[in-house]
Length: 424
Image (cartoon, rainbow, N blue to C red; front, top):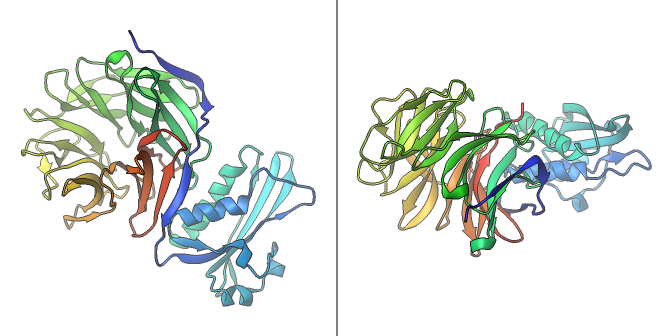
């Protein structure tokens, strides 16, 4: 029997939303108050903008929003703010806002204050449709994050992931995309056979992935807006681990068409395929450096799976990892100074961070089967797959330490997360 994959054109909303549980915060999290926004009389927005902003900032682990119930007052204008009250409550920063009707739907106005100095740090206004109100709340949260930390926020980004439910002939596997807070899940592909290794294009408009439809591995690239997909690799044997180059013109991938799993580079414009490794060992899981000049990959050429680095044009490979008998599934931090990878410690698979300059490794996770790590596009967090109470879920860890959260569905398994680039 030939398995059939279903590609949905256009992309449609998925029924199962990811639920996020904040499981730990950074000890030095900044206290901040996001006051419920003022509303024009009779206006009832479909979402609570202030609550979304508050939740976005809390999930970073770097902020500790004040519960509304603890606020002494609920000002919505600059004139109504008494900074002495907020200072006595221990707040570093205060956010107030208003939502008014607009021909397009709504106008959201927001002001961020430094409580200690009594000064205005950000004054922002956005016009939004009803449908985009949540997204615009994410953008406002990112403005606050960048102003207070100096780093872009990731509330307005997305995550791709694989879900599975059922078993045998009744198994359903999907590739989905959701907002970074788990809302608005959309099914990109649904299948009865495995889907694997989602990878974002640098513009966030396409996903590469591996499909085993018709019992044969193949790599596809799919446009998210149109749903159009293109077959880019379907050679005999392994077709796996796709990774877009930083400029989006090339794809690194693993092929075994010549008998052994090797790293190749595919030019997406000319379809020129170049073999980059030539070794009797297994070479797989390529990932690009941020400048596009190097590739890291997993190889057992030293006797056990370890991470190696070579020029993007091929050539000699340098071994990067030395601790433990298994290190794999690596990718670069956005600044190129470190990599995340999976390591095995006393039989348990954990997520680790390797500082490339000092060659110092630090564990980021504590599970027994943690895998598929992916950097947040601002480099402050890592998302990965893990097991919680017997089910596959996603989790994040803050590189600053302590900030953690868990993503899960009501049923089924969730795995292989990939964090999108920053929205441009």
